[in-house]
Length: 147
Image (cartoon, rainbow, N blue to C red; front, side, top):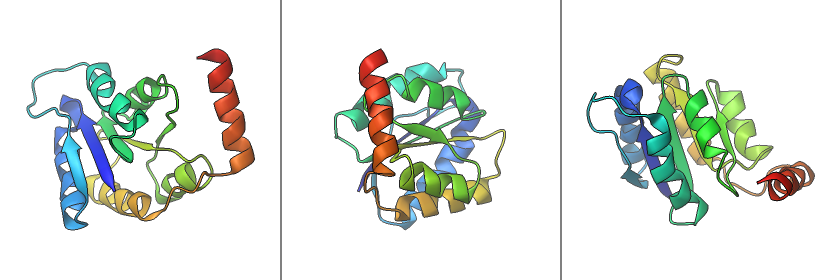
């Protein structure tokens, strides 16, 4: 599995903690930044990372910002991408099992580092198999109709 990870300055500490999980599991990843607390607009990070997941260079992506919401909104603007904000283990499981999401979003101002690491471990351990096929097909139909 290859994973892309990125954040804005609000989530630098959380991103670095999540990288510890990736390293611990021996997962290949690329860090799309940021690397300092200098302000950056989260859409700029999403714009670099998400196309890399959409075109298959990475199997999954992780985007973190203050709430996770902005990153998820940005990621979902890309054709073929399903991103979900997950602040609990059940949502993380369902993001893949029901919705076949490729991108996990979390908010550093919302969730603690310990829980975020546990959520990531669970999310990484679930194999993407297409989700609830009928519903995912309908999501794709909407995407094709409106994007």
